Image (tube, rainbow, N blue to C red; front, side):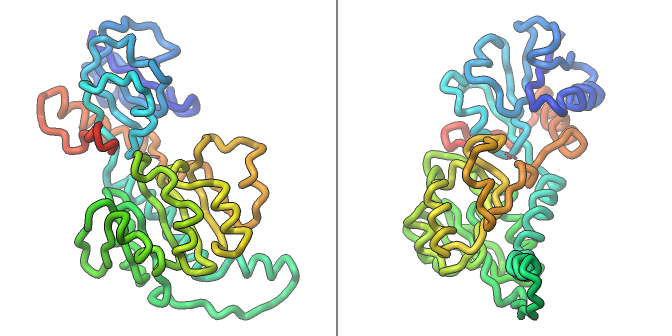
Length: 311
Ligand code: GLV
């Protein structure tokens, strides 16, 4: 029987299996590591962070679904069979979850909450003057499905929004900067930088000592894209020197973030655990099942990844 294998984080595996089995009754849905199945019957895979070299045994694979908008966790495998299309998972509920994560962190910096918290610890009652949203320049790096939606929402809240992407993006009310040539101009404007870039050869290490220098003193960083975009040591130095006043980090080079990592001890860093764009079966199951059904019926699936470009 045509089989779909699932390989995701252990906590939600069973939930994924039950959800997808209900939504795709014509397929046999199994867990990659735990269940018994015939590898030659596996035609579909739904994965987050699959093992390197793991796809080799599935010789009849027709399509892989990424439980995520990003596909770096699949393409890091040099043996990934490039003729097998990858469908990424995006959609309204996921865009909303991402935006609803980022907005309060932007507000937190706008309202100077880290300073207020510090004052409270010192029992100081200070009446901080909080700037209005339209006095704050927010930059969004990465204007794809998630970033574009987020930038629009920030605009609705009244922030001055600037965007930076590989190619220019026309969005009403949002100034667009594109390419390496315009990066310094973009960064020089932003007080709060939201990075939502995918991991590709062009974005790796893009936030480093030189690029932090381009930002105004005392700026903030919110990273919800990929840990690989940041040179960690340079971020620590930038916080140390006050170039950056704070950072909210949801993604890391190594996940989960190792217990001994220096980020844990830095008071200006707020750490969350890859929750910003988290796709659970409740939010992503229907989207994934619909994409797969369309693919199986030979229909056009719009979220097929450009494997060469990496997103
Ligand atoms: C999550 O990190 C995603 O790629 O959507």
